[in-house]
Length: 304
Length: 135
Image 1 (cartoon, rainbow over the protein chains, first blue to last red):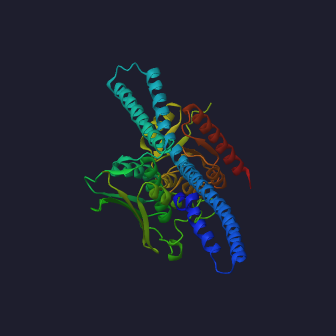
Image 2 (cartoon, helix red, strand yellow; image 1 turned 180 degrees about the horizontal axis):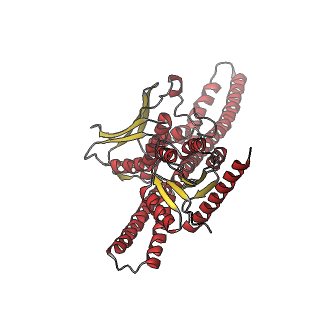
Image 3 (cartoon, rainbow over the protein chains, first blue to last red; image 1 turned 30 degrees about the vertical axis):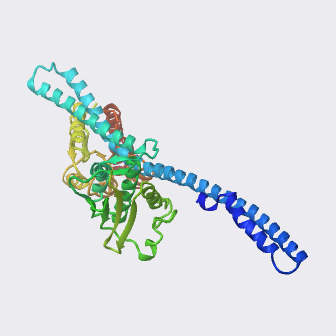
């Protein structure tokens, strides 16, 4: 953008011939000088106006970049907010089991000598449960940390199937509560793509959350990946939800456009997804049929 | 002190949580049994007599709040303690609206839970007596 507007030399290139042209206007000496003076003043004013405009455009561009960053960050926080209650539930359940197993072990210690086979079996079973529930908690917190860590866009080779599978696992339990099935149709031996994993996670999670919201209950989300054989890999997130009306489809990637009730959506999710996918060199598109469902398709460049 | 053991139904879809809690409550002079869903809980309550229900909120099929409304229709005197890993003001309000008496967040120490069960049982006994005296 800057290159198109910048350069005093370009201005001079126009100004000099303009003055010469005005000076050589065939209306006599005085008239020619007046024209040249007028043209000079006009050109001078245009130059300052032009500089001011270029400055304003540069500032607007900078503000837009900053706003983009802020939007991505706020979207991330909103997504974490939505997930946090589910995650608290996921962590509190294994913690409750761990607490109870410890109490049961304490009871066994107080009431038995652990000489009997049955008591030893119960003791060992409780220890196994504690270990398995700690693993369960660790799995949840690790996924959360992966999702929430401070993200500087870093392009790297990404194994898409694994990344998508992790995100699907994060929403799967919640989805099952509403009888929503998540089907994975991943192409085997999918080429690596060049992208930013935290950004991609954010996009996939957003699309999955939108899909569960669109279905409400009793439906299917199909996530598929395939090599398009054109240097790009395609991810499709298809739901069997209520679909998007035609008039909304045009605005679906606009910031603050939402059909959710107040307090339920920021209207930033898809706008951010669109921004992210563009930043990582991909494309995102949507097709939808009312009462049949919606499919979001992302295309990403294959790693060189 | 009476030798009566309060009858408690633990309703939770998490099998290991339910089973270990039942074992622990049984060591605390409480007669506990389990149900893995709201539907199973309603069946058991219709067929058997309980004093206190420990009810999870997030369960597949029928949620704890839906189960609570149905339980209170079957037996309004039954004391229901909500024991959940997912606390929110909205849920708490819903529970109070449907007559839930206690709202505990997992993980909850068994001694605290036992104390709440005892208090709930005492409340049930008092309310039953009051109801019997009310013409």
